[in-house]
Length: 361
Image 1: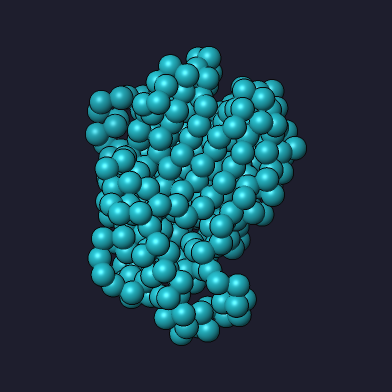
Image 2: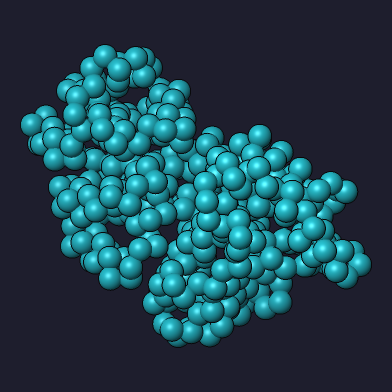
């Protein structure tokens, strides 16, 4: 039996869901694949739970409260040395900029990385390249399929198309599940924009302050990740982003914004009415230009109107959709579509990356 030793950094909604999924599936994976998924560390930003011998069990939440100790990446690394743990995987399900600074130390101490945290791939390009040099030097891997499209097989598809020599000419799609729901519904139903935004908040599709979704930065980061998969030298400042929030509502606290949502209604009703017949609104990320050149990419995030009978126009609910155009496919893109948001879907995608690494150890 091969033992895979896993440290989960972040026990929020996605982290907790992932831990439960790993626990529920471990016996079946052991029977079918012959390896044991041993969670030996769970952390939040301040505390951690460490197990010396047996895997952290189904009662990990209560154990965390009773046996927690002060969190330190250095303590976790020392723990792996003391107990001679091998086949190490560090799983980042935080949204922390500070935690990304630990990536190199973890790699240098025999960890492979799996991350749902987009920050490691979207801060400055020097860090991006240095991290990959550290991975190559240590013969370690860094998997992050859930950075774009949650559980959809998007990054892996783009990576292998690019590595195989396929000339990708454009990537365009609906990157945000929350904004997908918002504009899909707004395009089809005769309801005020503010009413639908409140529904999206109540359903948990947006952040508690929905301006974090509406500003477009999250879509911009996802688009940048795909650009860098094509070896483009872009920085986040290169992404042109249409902010969906009127200027006078961008500042101030969340309550002020939430109390004035009706000010969005006239703005978006006019946009809706000014469309051509049989068109619908979609908030898209678009990467195009001469993508064969390191500085040839144009990155745009914007609200557009598309015909209903196109693949973008037919997307429903909170689905994400991505169109990948290549020289071989010509005018007929490869389309990847499905649930692009949610804790269960994201955790399952992280789980998949863990299994990919486990198979290679």
